[in-house]
Length: 386
Image (tube, rainbow, N blue to C red):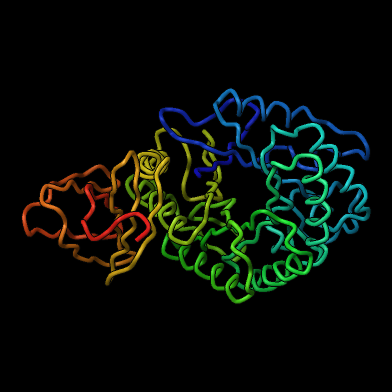
């Protein structure tokens, strides 16, 4: 599923011109516990109401709301760097207040908010200063309330960044183990797969592989995994931005991003952030006329509504299979270098993510590099589920 963050989600500045958005994640939109209950017991729903109305007007009815962070009045500590204000990252003094807030949200928006995420980037001290155990407690309490009042809503675990390995190892395994001890009070596990600022899709794929290895090591059940925030060229802790990622490079990277999500079993990927204004902390800008938006259109054409058939690696080339509209296609790319693919049906059409197409001749092979290629029809030896 194609997810997005939209700057000023209440203002109608939405993707258009065929750019698909299937789900909205509400973060940095003034719609968290911190802003809604800035004064204890007084709920200000205006921004959240407007965001949901604007999303519905844009045809987006799948909404993921981030519940935390902590309101200042309920903060147990104001020390250290905390986002967006001192106290926001601290554990709540009153967990009953957390229960009351979650109850109020779900009672008001049952059937309109489709998923609730417990916290944002709880592996980083600027977002969460408590322990993995305390975060698991908040998760369990919210899960119980949400399932009682809106059983159809999904509960998404606190997201974990992967690019800062020390923070990942400190938080994520312990959080997963604490969830296991509570009999898994989540429907979905969440990560943020941003690579370091100077890195690209190959490094993001390594991050996803680490997540999968960690879950296997912990014998976690086959819960869905979502990547609830992603971009490239991030300037942040420990990172050096690689600068702007535009044009064909952005198009190719977006397509590779979703292909990697599919091959690593990541059911949703939410890009951050759609905005008409340059966002200096990020290398890839999301606007209607950007290379990134062109990549989203390709993803929609190749993948959305299709049946995923899995992937395999041969030499340097990744080969994935998808059935869409009754037709089976192969999606090919190399993580690095180039590889040759032969045995394609004569007359098959091979089109890159950048729109360059060729017909495959008899006994002809094609060269595949880091720009994904869609081949239709697929070879007889592959099929969905192979």
